[in-house]
Length: 121
Image 1 (cartoon, rainbow, N blue to C red):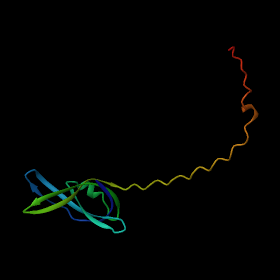
Image 2 (image 1 turned 180 degrees about the vertical axis):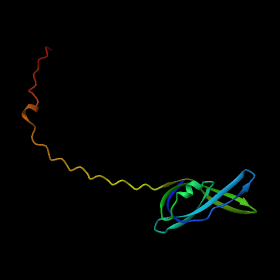
Image 3 (image 1 turned 135 degrees about the vertical axis):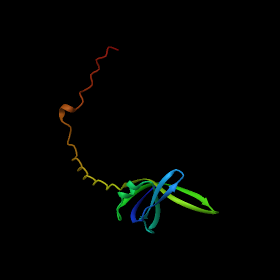
Image 4 (image 1 turned 30 degrees about the horizontal axis):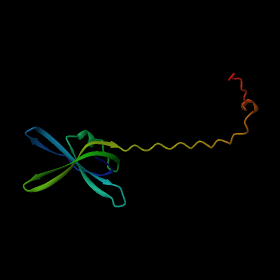
């Protein structure tokens, strides 16, 4: 899934060590512009280089997965980004071609020749 949003705030990175090794995660708050704007907290897990390219106020297209997990009888949901791209500004549309003037009469040489029936049968 993906959405287009504006970076509202970049939170500090946190990290730790698990059985698989060291990890880092950083949360970024995106605002999704619409009539009723909403904010979404997106987690970047071991993607420091992606977060380093983000700028507050910039517009990005975020590809993400939603994951829920249970811990001590409570459920927690993460929106995990797996790709973030700056929004490309749309190229200006070139002006339309002007309509062609109507064609005049066909020249005489383009008129069909009189049909000649030269078949023997």
